[in-house]
Length: 313
Ligand code: GLU
Image: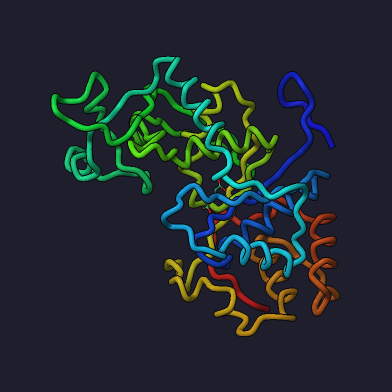
């Protein structure tokens, strides 16, 4: 039950953190099942947090819809549901600590200006490499658009349970990154690090689309003196031939039609997608039984290196 990561023992804790921007889809179901089974297999608890930081993109009623879907798949969480919208004070305190370290500066650059300044095509897909224009002050007359953190020209490395040893040089990869927007809103990178710390998360199991965010999050953990959780980034569900799934094809309802009563079949397909071999006797079994099998048998060593289509039996 306990692992000794730093000075005091911590309860093994996994989590699933959906954003309420749409219904639970195939990719997020994989992340939910994967994070649940890795936590349960190691005797830990599994938390659910609603990542509603990005309020304009949130859709009313989606958080409830996602939670109801998790319940239909038998994915029972431990403790209270957390919500990012309720943690603003904690983000503020962490932000202030980074300011006090002299690591944060105001930036007046627009996305367009940053894109124009980027000299070469960028290897990391999710952020424009920031060239450091405002590091030593904004140009006269510029208005602050965001607050950025200085990153050093050094590799940040970690062990991913599935992908192995991963290193990224943040200075070359994405440059000084945004912690807060001028409207006061906090960036996902800061919020997730603070939330995971506050809720005692010791293992982060999520989709590979977030792998490139992990070095930024590890940097923030180090600067804030938080212990580093274990990481496992799961393979991504794609369409045929590795194509990106359309919004419609990603819907659970698209695959199962009126899927009530067929959740077990999809759960078994998710287990197979994650490289596991559930026995034939589980065909037709209720979700709870399938999850109990997974909690006892899940083998992270079998996770496939590449993603692909999620095929229903
Ligand atoms: N809320 C994020 C998403 O839905 C996931 C955050 C995380 O797992 O770190 O993509």
